[in-house]
Structures are given as C-alpha cells and as structure tokens.
Amino acid sequence: MKADLCVFAQQMLAIWGGWEWGTGAILTRNFTLQKGLLGMHSFHQTRRADATEVVVEQYGTASQLKVRKVLLPAPGKDEVRVRHTAIGVNFVDVYHRTGIYPLPILPSALGVEAVGIVEAIGAEVDGFEPGQRVAYAGPPVGSYASVRNIPASRLLRVPDGLDDDDVAAFLLRGITAYMLLAHVYPVRRGDTVLIHAAAGGLGLVLVQWAKWLGAIAIGSVSSQAKAALATQYGLDHPILYREQNFVQEVNRLTGGRGVDYVIDGIGGKTLIDSLGAVRPFGMVASIGQVAGDPGPIDLAMLGPTRSVSLSRPGVFRFIADYALYREGAAAAFEALQRGVRAHIGAVFPLAEAAVAHRALESGASTGSLLLHP
Image (cartoon, rainbow, N blue to C red):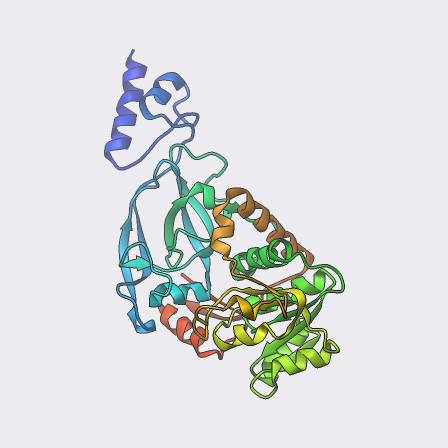
C-alpha cells in the first residue's frame, strides 16, 4: 500500500510540475495503475520549451518577417517536438508571405520543410523516440523555428548516412520531382523534357532526376553562369532565355517536333509560350507563377490543332494523401542515396530569413537556400 501511494505521489508531482510520465520506465511495480492514471506507454520529458520563430504578421514584402520568442507548450497527444537542425526555404514560403497563397491565420510562422532531432513525444505517439533524426515536408506551416510541435503523422525517419542539410534542401523538391516525373507525366527513357528555371533549387533536382530516368534535359536559364551550373548537374542543352527565344531553340533542338514534356514554374507569358514548345499529345505542367498568373487559358490554345495537355499539379495536394507522401519521401530518400542531390546555394541564420527571401525573389540565387537555427 505504501509503495502504491509513493507511486501515485510521484505521478501527481510530475503532472503538477508540467511533466508527462508514462509506463514502462522506472515505475516498474504497478503498470496497471500507471496506465490507468495517465494513459501512456512511454516515459518522456514533455516540459514547455523556449522557441524562436520567424513569423509574418501581415502580408507584404520580406520586411514583414519578424523574429519572435515564444513559449512552446508540451506536445499534444499525437504530436512530436522536433528541434530543428536545418530548415528548407521554398518559393511557396514567398507565396505564403505575400498572401498569394493565404495562410489559415495571422500572425503565422512560415516554412514547410525541416530536419531535426526528436526532443519529446505525445502520449499516443508510437514509432518515435527522443534522439531520432526526422524530417518533414508540407503543411502545417511553421518550420521557420528553432523548435516546434508537429503531428507525428507528418514525420519521416532520416536514413543513416544522409546529411541534415542535404535532406532539408532536397526533401520537398525530391517529392515534387517524383510527383512530376512519375505521376503527372511518367517520363521514359528517350523522352525530351524542357525544364524552366533549370538552375533553381527544384530545377537542378528535376534535371538530375530526368537524366536518372534516361531522358534528354533541356533547360531555360538566365545567365551563362547558371547555364554552366545546370550543365554540371547533367543538363544537356541550356537555353539563355534573355538572349534566345526558347520556343525557337526547342524546335531547333528537336528538329521541329517539340519536347514531350514541359515543366514550368515561371507562369505568366512563359507558360503560354511553352504551349508552342511541346509536341502534339505532349504535356505542359504548370507548377508556379513567379512571373505572375497567366490568367484564364482558352481551351482553343490547347487544341485541337496543337493537341496538348495542360496540368496544374500541386505537391501539397499530392502529399495530403498519406500513402503518396510516404511513397514520394521514400523515392526522394532513394534518389539521395543514389547520388541525386540538391545544390545548396546559401545558408542563412534563422533570424535572417528576410535576407534569404530577398535573395530568392531577386532571381540571383542558385540552387536551394537553407536556414540554420
């Protein structure tokens, strides 16, 4: 009886002190009582934690990004606390900051991709333990933070041998590449693919992945330096779109046939022009609008004369499906292990997220950008 009371007292002190305790650790004599009292199956520290976040309080330029300190609550029953080691910067973060893709609530931390270490787990979480390396991609937003709580269902274990920075720079782009090259248009050996912004973070991943599949990669770039970089990553034919008409160059390179597949993250006039660079019964995938929304597209622009398909796939819709998220992540990790990689153009401290955004929006950056807490 005294032992039971002692156990009970320990548990109550733990709860009152802001700790959550579970079974199977040090209170080994009364598992039934422990489980009944707390409904847990593991023993972990889940005290509140100090966190640094970069948030947007109102939509606008990079100057709207603010650094704030917050007190992070203990993880919810189905959440995991992750202390970040590397945070990916993606153009969708700019769309969130500007309100092109509105956020659920303001103010809000930005960011949809990171790698880190598990610090604590919620009461009903299985499969994760403190000290494990994990990564995630996609909503809920909030990766621009030193530490955060996130649903366990979004976490992925990082395979041994992969570097944190490489994973943070690659995961979302790798899943996007898999979606585009395996699901939207299954690329086969010998296909010709035109990749716009081929020296960007996603562009360089797409170039390597397309070559891995045996395709011929043509890419539009803005400068000789970016052409050289993309060529180092396997691009077969760079097109300097500021000096050359990319439609004419594509037709020259393909003997007037056109490419099988165009992947366009630029939007605006580039998307419209891309319809003239693809062969009959080929496809154009619109995945971004850096240059603006092209507006409504008349179906007559697609056919019957051209007979081309236009797709508007979204990676967040893709990974909203739990099975596809896991499938895409597995493919991304395999690609990394096979040598496909992200080019890390620059790394910024978390507090300088606004500088990273300006570099990304200027078009001067190459490859992927990262933040370090």
